[in-house]
Length: 81
Image (cartoon, rainbow, N blue to C red; front, side):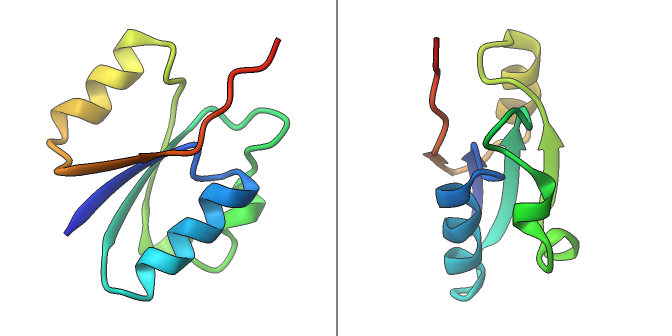
């Protein structure tokens, strides 16, 4: 199964990515890479996933993710002010 994980480059999201990879999931990550989201958190698994840099508050980025027709989505994004 293919899964889209938003916020997948953060601490919790990146660990969830690793967890699902162990069960054979095909992982797609959408992350803005702000203070908490860092590609370094995905070190060792970047070649096994499809990483998309984008913002869930940007309709164009979300459209790109939705057009990939992901059957399932997990969200680990946090909006902070």
